[in-house]
Length: 336
Length: 269
Image 1 (cartoon, rainbow over the protein chains, first blue to last red):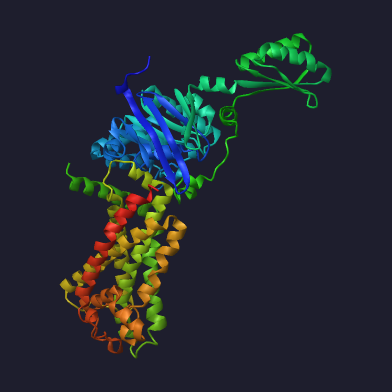
Image 2 (cartoon, rainbow over the protein chains, first blue to last red):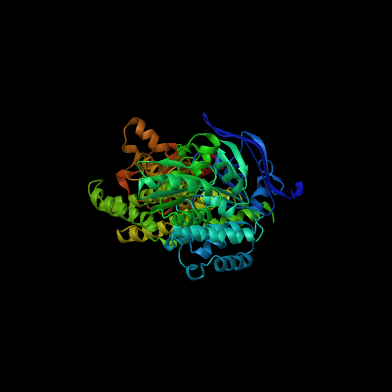
């Protein structure tokens, strides 16, 4: 059931922003129903950060309009700022303040009293599993802990809308899982979230709806499953020991796969698209075993952002000079 | 809550945050304290014996100049502080919060003023060691320190503007300091303006640093023994305290709005 218009937490229409000769945003529309998570997926320089900066009042669009929690970002930026929490691409944690002091400061700057800011900071430190580190300067924190602290900072004022700009960029796998878990809890609480990411997997894990953005335009949208269907699911690859077994392998993969299998004689490899992932893998191995085929290697490739881009645009997600999207100076901050 | 109390609260929070930073990194104070000490010792003992006949008189003359130079250098610390906040994304977080816009600047200049006061204290003690004394009235001495702090605060706003314009800490580190050298040396901070050649003399006479240095010497009662280092007879030299005060006001009136406008613009590129 589509939500009524009043429960749209974020709405942007035809946003355009140019930097010099670069059209960073070329008419972006988006809508986030209250209590849902929208993943904005795209490569560097696609316009994700520019969109976020406009929606968080850090940047004015050249044209187009945007409303966050019912407030116009250009006409009433202060009301927007009171309704949002932002966690940036570069964790804006003051590393010489303790975790607790960082959150207390943010609370005070939201206009909370000393008492309220103190108790809120303590509460969040506990909730984000920073209790042991709460009174240590943030510079002693690991990357994942910093990111958790930054996320906590976005939640201090219990904002209606939380904006997470590439929350796991630059984190190691462990920090990434850690951060996903925290965002997952946030989502379970019913907070409206706008999430930008370069990773399909991340959008898949966290977002209800995904918008794919490239060259400042939204090029596709839908649930993760819908997008994957466009890409064509996963690809199963089997390498056999004997070239004579390639034919039977191709037949079996044709039965479990969703398209015509391809065969690489030199590598003794057969590959096929599958819709059911690991299930298809298990089924293929079981049947190959029945046929007494000696399998040397097996791999299941999940669709990557590159696959999505290839399927949607016909070109690979290219790395663009990030300077187009990042105002000067910000790039150098990416040191940790 | 009224706009003014909200602004004062936000500025207070930012000042607190900056001072906590200083407390956790005491080496930040080294620049503000060791550098003036070094200057006092270098000038007192290296130049002191070759300028004029009486080294004691030169040290007496020198202290007003070093005070003026030190508070002028406060602008460089503001420059670096602002640039660092910008680079780390702290400014972005501040700008996304419903806080008073100017509070980041007021907080920065206020905390740098506090650091500057510590620098003045350390330097005064160092001056006492090399023979400098406050020879005027208590009230004049208080006025002298207040004038130095006012100048420090005014220079800090120039620094804030430069820091926001610099864009990175590396640029800020050179941009913050480089212009301070001609500005402080083409003045009566270390030698009398009247000894300089033609155009330099005019620049030095009208340089606010000259006025601050001369006013500090006057208010601390350090003008009696200076002999060959006597002040010039240009109008600013004859009315140094008034001209110094006016300079501070003019700097603030120009650079405070400039810095605030720059702050609004800088992260929205």
